[in-house]
Amino acid sequence: MAIKGQTFKHYPESIKTEAIRLHMVEGWSYREITKHLDIHDKGRVKKWMRKYRECGEESFKDKRGVPFRTETEQERLIRQLQLEVNVLKKWLQILNREVRKRDTTSLMN
Image 1 (cartoon, rainbow, N blue to C red):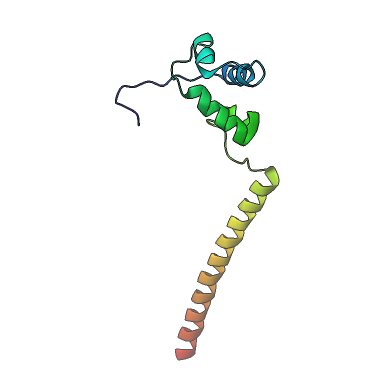
Image 2: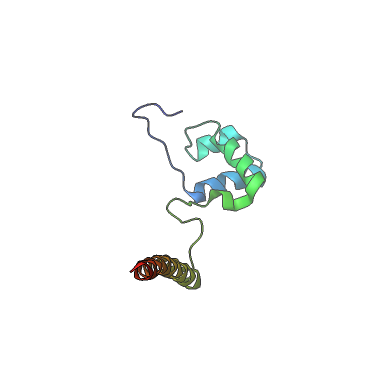
């Protein structure tokens, strides 16, 4: 839970992967890694290790501002055409309603 005015330290992917390497390859303890890499949160390396074991190196990629899925040109065109078809269907309904009104009116006269 964030406290008002609290700032968070963002660690780049290179620091995270180095921390993982030091622990897994070199056998360093979490305490040694946090001192060596100047990581302020004592449990941070532990959390990175858990994420690494669950998702691999992809878990460290910065995905802020990246859309979940980009729309292809073909998908955009299909969506545009579907919108146009829906508009035309609506206009056809309105036109048919008006024609029926006129036919009903002309039959009464």
